[in-house]
Image (cartoon, rainbow, N blue to C red):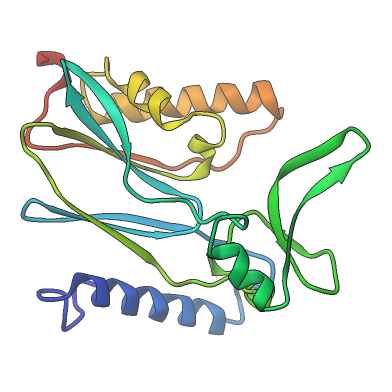
Length: 224
């Protein structure tokens, strides 16, 4: 991405081209089975004071803003769920179906993407990299971009995480949990422990969880 000829002038094009190239290389690699496997992607790119979010799937970029001496959450990228406006319409137009699995005791789990003629793959997001079978049912790998001008007087923290965090810890709770921690490393440890505990409580398993925390403008939580 950073070696792309437009990296200096058009970050969005550089990111989109790099993502497409990587996905193409992975799909063509016969050692990697992408029929029913894939990945999400979330990036936060800062140039000067401009923040650009790049998102595919249900990982997420979250901002922590300081207001009245406390940090408050601001969702910066938005999850691509199968029942989201625009996403569902595209899937249906491609011949796919969107529904949640139903058991005797009611609906279990989130809306998922299925082929029109077969109950596979059951993907719980509407965009992903890889997932070749799901892509025949309207799932795409196009990144969605968000932008904002960072405010040095209020923007304090960025969190980038997979749904291993977001499944049971919402945006506001995430910022509340990391607020007392002295630095990014301690914030990551705190969030991972809390996410793991909630997974065990709810599901008796722990999903893959990746979390990045970064402080902005030399923010020091311990000094606030």
